[in-house]
Image 1 (tube, helix red, strand yellow):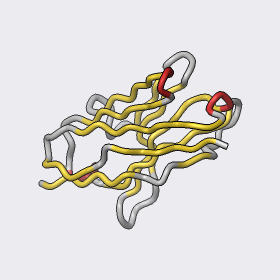
Image 2 (tube, rainbow, N blue to C red):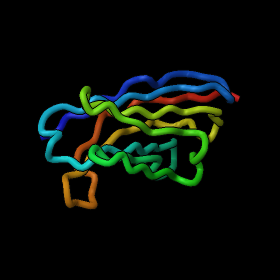
Image 3 (spheres, rainbow, N blue to C red):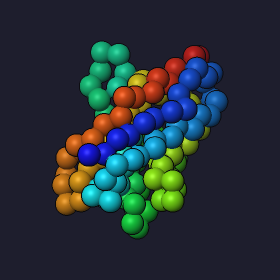
Length: 119
């Protein structure tokens, strides 16, 4: 099992920055990396960004590319999401998730952290 705990959410104004953290514990060695997803009220959950543990490959949703940066600290088993130039449309619950090596499905999920952006 893998446990994921997000932190760092909060209330900010449009244009501000925020950094989310996702601390992974348990059998993290069985995972290939972590991803960030978000879900706004009334909308489906969407992919935001992901990173692999081994070679630091990163992927971003088009809507956040250039504003958000995903990074990791392998020693701490922690992945970060630096969010700059936040917009009201970024407001959502942000979840981190992990998938097993060789799998295309995110199997493990955190409880989520709320990001609120006021205009």
